[in-house]
Each structure stands twice: as structure tokens, then as C-alpha cells.
Length: 371
Image (cartoon, rainbow, N blue to C red):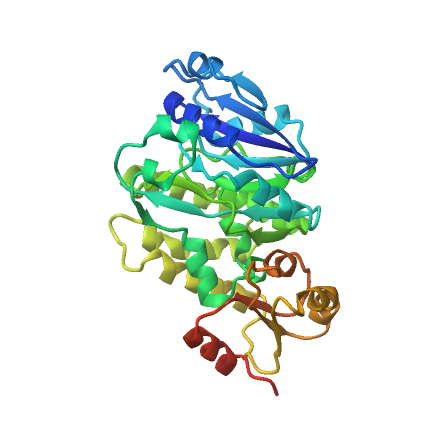
């Protein structure tokens, strides 16, 4: 499999250099290859010269776009997607640090099915100095500031299930800081909408069009990336609110798009009366209500999996998932069913949990009760 990492950057030369060196340490499975496309969105900090001196084990394409009033992440990523030659496009931000297993984690899920949107987690770093020279030699958490927060999508899945594809609002979480899609699908839906200006939602809107195209969504916790945490300030919120209005107007017949307005109460610096998790839980329940999915979890069939029966369960699960609502408890050491479960398309409910704690297991068994 050929993979292309697309990185937009603007006046972030040292950070993108660091990311390129991290990608140089990424492991590839046999038969896979990697290229990287850096799209410089009009930088004036010498980014081109800084990365030109690097010796890297993969093909690097550098594309400079002159700065204009319409410059932005959507246009930069589209330019990178156009230049990319890989089957799978992996998106990352210039100021990220990725673990050595990052690329392989994306590739492995895309081998499960060809129509997939795959997201990976982002750890939030606190303020502090990054030891770039050490990271250039080896990945180490000790070379980074303290991790002060973790990906909120995992908190959402903890409330519902770890089957990302079973979330009614899964398309909203197609965050382009750590996302991969086959290039053919990106081109088929027209890429990012460049009319989104400033911060926010151009990636969620792309996710919505990929969702409408019928792609499955999966979340792989092994595709680890880290980024300095940023709080939403008034300027960012103004841009996000304007982009949300455009998003809703563009898909005016889709009530599921409009329900994103509930998140305003988490982002608005003047009114954070609900936190992000509260808002996203409400958004998910609203989307499920619109789809007629607010059923009592009665009549689910429980499927318990361990290393001994994993292969047999994998073989039978796709057909079983089309016949009845399932709750899968995966007790395998390596979460063997995590990817395959998220890649099953079914109109039935398919909940998934990997090695839940004793308390969580009891809650699951109590909640999902058979008739």
C-alpha cells in the first residue's frame, strides 16, 4: 500500500521539520511505502530552506502557495491531495509529534476495507520545551512536555461504545489533525470545501460528505499523535460560529447537521455552561432520535470473545451483525476485533467494548439484557 502524508504549514518551519523527522522513524509493514507532501501556505519564516537540508528515507514534495485572502487549511490540504500519489492520504498538522507506529496503524485499518475514514487520537501537550534533537534520534515521551489532556472522542465512545462507526455523529469527528482516507474518495466528494474560512469545521463537513457517500468510520487508538493544547479564544469561536452557519446553510435539508449548534455552549468563551462531553452526548442522542434509534437496549445478543475463539467469532460476526443487535465484549490481549467490528456495515446496533473493567462489565451486562 502506498501512503501519502499531507501536511499544511504556515510559518511553522521548526515544527514541520520535527514532524518530518518523526515520520522518518515510522515503521512500515512489508509492501507499504510512504511519501510526504508539505504544502507551505505562504510562509515567510524560511520553511523551505529549513527542510531542504534534511535527508529523509521517503519521498518529500514541497509545494509553496503564495499567501492570499483566501488562503487557509482547506485550500492547502486540497493542493496536497492533488499532488499526492498514494492510495491512502494521511492528514497531519505541522506542529504534531507522531509515534513510530503512526503510519502502520493507519495502513492496517485501510486493509480491512477500501471505503474507510480512519481517525487516530491526539494527546494534548502542556506548555514547555520539546527536545527536538532527541526526537530526531528516537521517539520518547520524555522529550515532550507533560500530556495534560486526551482525545475527547475516546470519552464520547466510552459513553456509548468503542465502535466509532456506530455513533450517529461519527462524521463530526473526522478531525484532520489525524485522519486518513483513500484518495479516490477524497477526489470523488470534491475534497475540502474552500469556502470555510478561519478555524473549524471544514474537516467535519468533509466527514459529512464522506458519510453520505457511504464510507465506514473507524478509530484506531494505536495511531498516536501529540499536539500543544489550544483553548478556543473569542476570535476562534467567531470563526467557528461563522463556519457552522455556512455548514448548516449548505446542507439545509439535513437536521443532523444543525444539531451541531449544541456545541456552542462548550466553545463560546462567554458562555461555557456545558463542557464538551456534555454537549457531544446531547448531540449524539439528538442524532439518534432523528434516526429513530432511541430504543431500549433489550434483546441484544451478547458476544464474548477471547484469544481462543477470536478467529471463529471474526468469521461469523458480519452475518450475525446483520441479523440482530449485538454487544461484543473483546477480552483479547491485542483488541483483535476492534478494527473488524468498526468495519462492519449493518443497520442493526453493534456495540463494542475491549477489556472493560469489572464495574464497566457489570454495567454492560445489566444494561444490555437479552429477552
